[in-house]
Image (cartoon, rainbow, N blue to C red; front, top):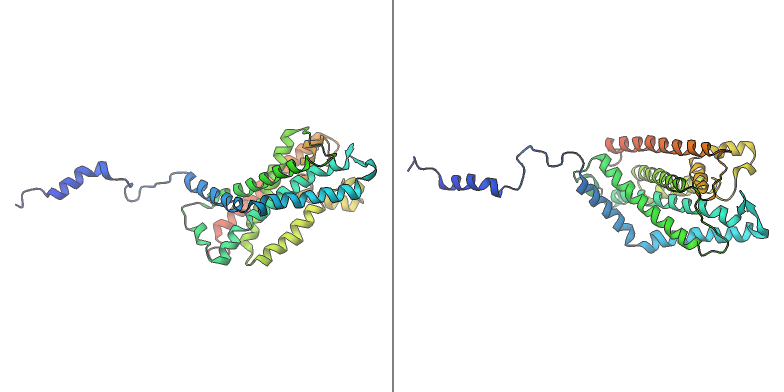
Length: 292
């Protein structure tokens, strides 16, 4: 009996190649990028804000449209023109990209903060996602919301009398809209990591994001300002996003006298986002206020 092979062991060994579904111990399952996990987190974030689209997409669009109505009625009387176009056409692109940026910030600044307050932050940290994959999914979801808000604003503003949204430079519309949304998404993600309660996040929104947005040339050209305030405006990244986005529609802006100045601004915004992404990645990797 001792010389006979173990029938169960033999059966298991013969069936193993056909039945084994898991890799051997120590063999990596995810070799480079966890695309499945990245897509899952992205879809989770998109579905989260899309379930309440009345609040996250349509309400911001209507609120921003009210700015157009109020300022057009208040400042656009008498056929006033700015940069060679009527006031409504001048202000519309700035309002569109401003709405996109503010909602990109709102989306990116919510998930981590709510997770820390509700005690569900582990749902973001436990899955097999690297810090880069986690950041990419969160930023992509925020940019998606920004684009949807932008499209809703375009549709609404086309109904307002006197607004022309003819595109002169499509590359500028796409680039500055994307760079502005990514910039605010990264700021929102950093804000949600730093904040410990919703009041902290609201403070960043009310005392940093809103003033920088409204004082960035959305409703005026900075040439009308005193030299000192022109210098301050040129230190505001929001100014380049809004003026560059407006350049895409009107073919002119107050960034500079030449198209090369707009191109330099586009490159500068790209480099700024790369630097900010590096900072965000380093903070996520350190686990500051997330894992401690």
